[in-house]
Length: 152
Image (cartoon, rainbow, N blue to C red):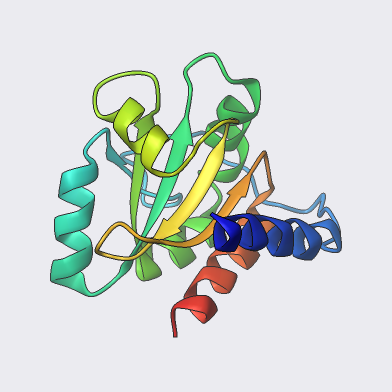
């Protein structure tokens, strides 16, 4: 628990110094589009298996359907071409509603108490990096880079 808290604090400090960019390219969110991040929807077990098979980390978007910042991520950040290229190449991406299906189990496993919560986990489902709240594409890529670096 102490390590998870420390990771959150470190990530918050890192992200507080990243300037917000107004030049982020925004496209309409479309899971069939090759421009943005492609997610496995609502299937954590499939994400775990693909992470094992492809030797990749998992990027989890832990969201709630009523969450405004979650909707902003889906509309503004996840469709970004640069974010899509980075996350699709380096992670198995999965989006799970924490209030239905397998979501409550994951919510408890990762101590999710705010939305959105973004988790980078290994193929065993262990947390590598963890953060909360909205971020633009540039900040999200920095978070992904942080997770990759922590996993080495």
